[in-house]
Length: 351
Image (tube, rainbow, N blue to C red; front, top):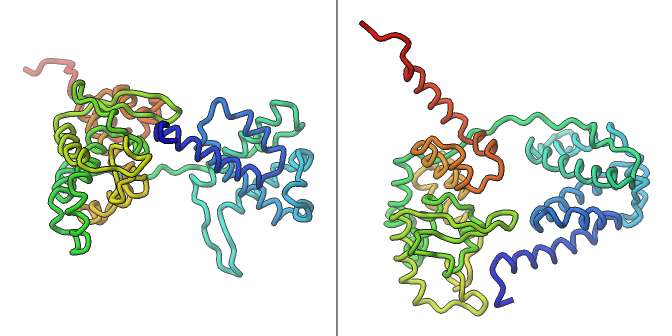
């Protein structure tokens, strides 16, 4: 696996994990995963497998007929006999867990929506291939989704965050010990995320050869396997150059020689470590905002849209396949722009 890229290695690991998850589902589920394989990523199929495992666990605990069966004995005929009411009860099951008289919320709107969406795709596959006669999932109405507040950093908060990463003045004594070792790397990662809007998975997957200073860009692997060049400005270039001066002096562990960003163990840094790093610095600067790498991505998108006013450019740079996804996140800014245009057209000249 040493000659494989990070993304190829991750795909192999995901496929191994997926096979284990599928082995715990009813046998006919293999047909579904085989059918969707050409048009879905391994990560997407893993999400489907988790969602379906919750559904079949529900059937085996709550359905009096299926509760008597082993998971391997559940068939498509059993699936065909379920009704819309059965699936609506499943939605209720997803939302609450009861402990005596106490009720605990298990899944919120988006969690329920994803699991029902997975179930709809599951039923649609077998119905479309004429393996079942009924498709109750098609008749189930999705839960109403309330829009979440979009959290992003203000301009001054971005500057304060980068200052804290660079200086570490407000870190604890224990944190300062690690900060002395990771300051240049942390600043490069944070500047890159804020200055390009790339996803955290794209960031940790970068190899040294993916950085192109001549053209001012990085070669990233997008979701779905698409490969693109994302361009960066001088601030990002300076931070990356400083880090690479340090990186070339580090002998990475075998199998991690090509990785751009390394952990203190000299291995490719992982997503969780970057998430924890962002959280550590952001807590100091903006304790009331829950800042994640994705919020840094939203911050970049906001800044780019404010500067250009081009929603299609923002969608392209962020790697959104549908511009409506981008528009949904920056609707408030579009409203500001529309409001600012109210006096742009003059009907009559003032005397």
